[in-house]
Length: 534
Image (cartoon, rainbow, N blue to C red; front, top):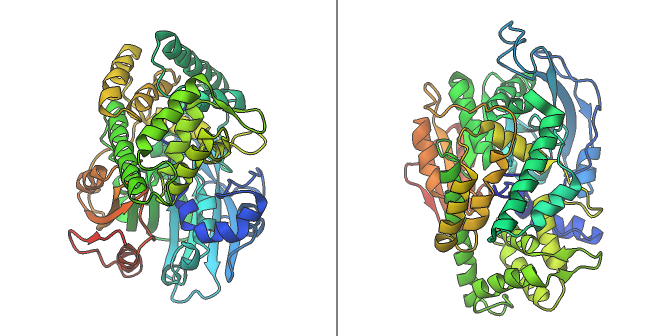
């Protein structure tokens, strides 16, 4: 994730947006939205079950209503809240009283979606969209709309309850919020390649200010938002829904959560599908460079598509030249939107990032850059705001607050500003469009306060086979990480989609059939299975 508030490019649920393209066209376009928005967060709806206690479920049709205007036909939506220890290493689990958060709890929000057609129930399929910072409650709703809208196939929803949870610090689950709307605007609008020393120093100052504010608000509890703590929460979710073993579908950063769970609780794994793999062993610099390479490759794929489809791509034949020119022009003469906002180089850059998460976003980007050349930044803001979680009134969800808290709690590497400056220059040559931004994005955790709580990076000894899905054109979790995660776990089986965009299931029949068979019957995909793009 990238930017002062993130380590690498965000895994905001673009895959859910793409999966529900049909539903979006029918339900949301009338409201002026082109992509699903995050639902308003409501805290304190019902008491949270105490740690280890069974939750109280209540009907919650208002959640799909807020998200997409209605619930899916034939689906029932129920919500609950459970309490989990803030610090699984203190208090409730060990009897110790020392350490931050000892004896205190976080609330975890759950949604359970059950089909009226359900038969021969296997259990619950727990889902997480990644981020970190994206809502699993929202994603479960999106996935409940069925294969006709790009959601989960009936073969799965007929056999499983679909369970989504917002991880600790995210959305409805004791959300962490310490970054002001003004600072988020400043970050997203900042030059993605602050080349002069003064501009670089200004970015450092912005990161430092945010870190100080978050440190002042949360202090020594910041490390408690890390991945290992959240993976232990997942076992509380498993127990709350009454399953002896976990069946799990994790996208993007959700693959890291799933991999961590498998290492902590290998005997409690029934089936894990990890789609859009994160290599847990990559340190900050290696991970950032991997994403720079992945986004450059995805942008090259977009450029080739543009040149071959000039009738659908108004910036053909030289898409890279058009985008680079648009970013350069925005540095000195940004177009102004109807609300007075300036489409600075940062906003143009994040429109590009947003569009590369799905192949359907390519045409959106081409149209947005073409319109920007004519002085209209509306399309740029639509794409960038969707990525950033910026709402129409200028307020932000807590996506990137949580993103920062989790990433920085996990990260052990802390390069110097001088090293980051060197990498910015080097990666400008190797990865000209995305490298500098990925380099300076590392400043976020350099200036972040609090301790670190790194997750484990070992084998899932005793776990059954785990399916790891990779997409060859994935920008955010480059394909090379797929085999790396499978190998680290020791029980991973790679399933490859030769497609574009971020994550694969359930976009094609080949991938869908393989994953469905594994989830339902525990049939592991054959070794080396590669699914064609179409």
